[in-house]
Image 1 (cartoon, rainbow, N blue to C red):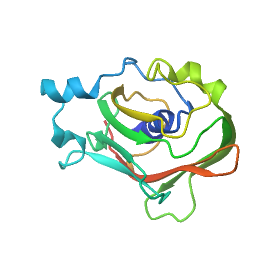
Image 2 (cartoon, helix red, strand yellow):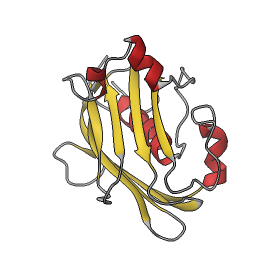
Image 3 (cartoon, rainbow, N blue to C red):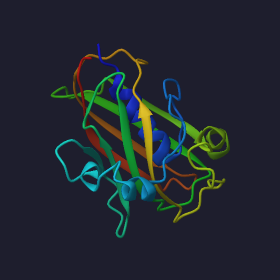
Length: 191
């Protein structure tokens, strides 16, 4: 059984909301400078969302002037393959502590198969995020810009059947301001 859907979503969640849920299974810990990768030709612009072999998350926050792009390739996830996640996000609010909610639906099923909300403190996850974003400090300021490509090896961590999933992440800060929301479809296949 393929197990990549929650693994990738949790990785994307970790990077874009700076929340580490599950770090197990990530074998390649070093971030790759996105400018160098694109210039070197090893990661083409087509792989960042223009081609058939990429997928992306969509912001559901709707803030005017918001900058949000999270794209990965290959689009279809398989265990034991490396997925490259391109993140270009600017935070819309400061974050010290708040509520983070994650939901995952199986295609054509109205109720989530996974749903969790929890309080998240910036200083609790900063140590886990520092290998990826060494410049990140608490509190995370409004206007903090993350623009990087991260490689992750998808390894079996959560047993799920192959299929099409929809995932959503929402974050509220300490002032109960909706600071981040994204959703997307994730496709996994058996090995």
